[in-house]
Amino acid sequence: MHPGRSIALLIGASVLLSACSTTSAPSSADSSGSPAGTVTAAPAASSPAASSPGARAKLSAADLQGSWWTWAASSVSESNPVSDPDGHLCAQGQEDGIWFLAGTFGGTVTRTCTVPASAPVAFPLVNMIGEEDDCTAFMASAQGKAVLDGRALEPERYEATDVRFVAVDGNPLTKDGGRFLTHGCGLWVQLEPLAPGSHTLSIRGASGSFAVGVNYKLQVSAG
Image (cartoon, rainbow, N blue to C red; front, top):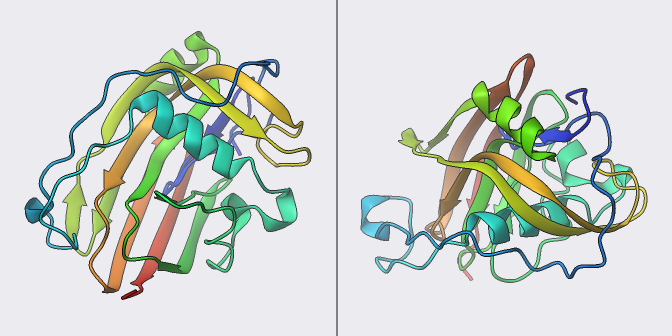
């Protein structure tokens, strides 16, 4: 994991995480993200892997990051998807509406995952939570690449954004449980639901000396 005051995560860098806990204190605020503008998804026709020609609205930068961090911090270390060495924890903590992918605490792994056909997929190439200045420094050198079935994906760049999320005690991201209000940032991808069948996804991300990677073998169920 990336050392420092904040939590850095690279997903594929599925990112995500730094070695220390966030400096933001738990907040009594609810876990819904502060709106940061809604981005309309490109028509699925532009992506040969998408299962539907219709477009759907993407989550805002605040909602996406808040939901992802809540998911990533909802499991203790032994069952946390960021620690997953092979994909057997891909379904851990997933809820209806969107399917998240995770990175590692540093280094590269290969994971095999089954993904429902009806769920949009979202993941960071590299990301973190912390103070606004931490995000500014982190994003200055943030870079990454994601390739789905041989086609490069264009990530969205999120600078420091107010993020609310909920964590359980013993999770490897914040260590402590509670409700958190902090800043999130990173390089992110949101995809329409993938077509049934097999897909490959390569994710790489880095910021400074911190780098991670994930090679995903995704099997999308027909039902």
